[in-house]
Image 1 (tube, rainbow, N blue to C red):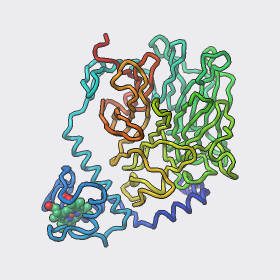
Image 2 (image 1 turned 45 degrees about the vertical axis):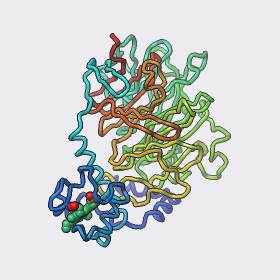
Image 3 (image 1 turned 30 degrees about the horizontal axis):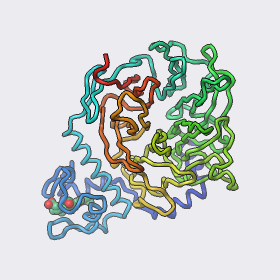
Image 4 (image 1 turned 180 degrees about the horizontal axis):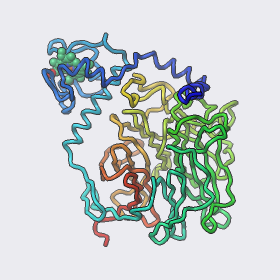
Length: 478
Ligand code: HEC
């Protein structure tokens, strides 16, 4: 069977989810909005949106309102007196939403071209809004697509490499030999992903190391899985499977596995399983993908999980309708679970996760497909949670961590978010359930793949391309 064909068969199993999806998404003509722009708008607004006979759509100056609704309205109803034709007949609602996303993208790239960002080399001092800092290289070479770090109580650090290796950093040096006994991985985005220590790791008998990874079924399909084991003489031993879906639920393709691991310190392990690019599965409680799960630390099901008693539902599910969550963190202030969800083009989200809630993907979203075709014009729906904030255009959200250290008191309890495509390390000020301010601390020196609070009170940042680990230290540190 051809791969593309197989994909349709596999994803179409999600009957219930697919039905909701179809119902909420009246068929769109689904045309690439970037091409539509060229055909229908460029003659007046310019090929680059920089303006022509009509005004620029990317300079941030709006005569008829710059919010999403006003822009959509300008396209739909026109401004005949000014020479803007009404174009309601030319597009469906989802396509108009796509045009808005595309206009936002062009405006953001225009702004980025005219803004100077901090792209510091290690050791150079960066003066940011609240703190002066510099990057201090932890490991500069020898890593291949590092993903996550865990800090062992003896001072060593464990680092996952996505191709499927667990490495050890000892006294600041990367040991050449990876840890033996690591499970084989699926490949692509489904490699070795997160690593986390049991919250009582130092207590005798509790020295469990948890790993999330893309697992491969005998039939060659993949799904996110979790194991734990103990580190003994350079090998992972006593391995126990903590989470593994039935092989029949595995999906084809190397995309969107998640996956963060997070302990709440009250006996539970939370982890994300990406949606595996199977639209509809996210809304289907019989499928593991497109969900956040919660288990007891030993892999058993907590009795008070929201779907533990619902016939047919996977009892480990905590929330659903989540596309590809690569960031999970607890607020040190409220204890709430925050999630960064890698969205479609123009639909990255920051969410607060509540037990049993539906986060809407792919029924509602602010984004469109990466090929420029629309998804939907539905951004809200009863029974589906709205994000705390979202990014149009996308920044390709990755890791998410509240800073809890003492080295930067000004940043305490701020939220740090990493992005892949735009290579940003962002600082978000959170008040209650709102983000009140965002600052780009560092941009353009690599894809930000992991952000961790070190036991030394510094933030550790894992970068890809080039692959390395840096920590952020105050500028006056020698
Ligand atoms: C025949 C020329 C023409 C075409 C084609 C056209 N526009 Fe316009 N558009 C205008 C004019 C003229 C205005 C009034 C603003 C100005 O230029 O001062 C305008 C205004 C707008 C505004 C409001 C701008 C503001 O400042 O509030 C938006 C948004 C917009 N156009 C989007 C589009 C999009 C998207 C398309 C293609 C789907 C499009 N236009 C096609 C001529 C055109």
